[in-house]
Image 1: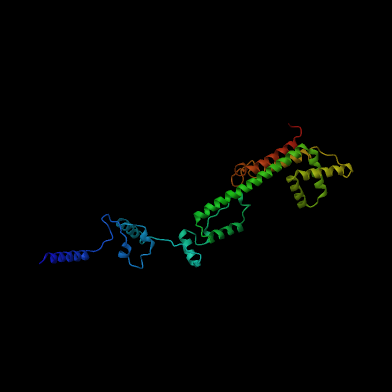
Image 2: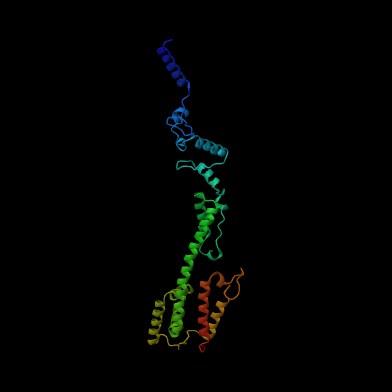
Length: 289
């Protein structure tokens, strides 16, 4: 065989050997090389973004093991806006929402029972159930609502106390005016509810008390009122009776039917009544300091 023939045979043998060796898309370090998706993954799956999350054999095997571990575990699919009601019910149930709204535990504190009525609590339960809240979420939101409302109530009570204190000081510093106002109301208003309404206006606005006191003074000048005035506006016995009434208020001096003292559960109201009682004691003992 000639040299040229031997060279041709060797070249053909080498080409045949290369053709028989399988093409690889993984290098010696296990990293994927360009074209690996087209070679190893079927065409209908290649576009899946999951294949972009790893770049070598190690990463792909780790992901496979992770996915295998998740098989059989319980999962929750979040419904979309167009999902039917039963899918949302299933989702809320998985979240822990009770089967009915009546199962929510939403206790109204004793000091706020006058603020919340049954309708308001029922409305809140309807809303929480519709939003799919579980008991933990409901309890946290209800706790915040309680703090919010209590802050409003305490702020209003504080403002009322300041108003009451101002009137107490006015009535103590102006005993004759205080008596004139009382006489004007008692002698010219027959309806008890109307009396209460006017007295409430006086308690909340010293300007109203001043106005009535001045009107009473004008009545006296024109001899419409001729009775001599007590400098304290009521007899000592009447003032003492009012002071004792305040002390008999449940929780003021003695615990109420729940064993609670007012100063422990509602210090603002306690301070208001305490000042009111002290005013009456002062009127009952005009000679005291």
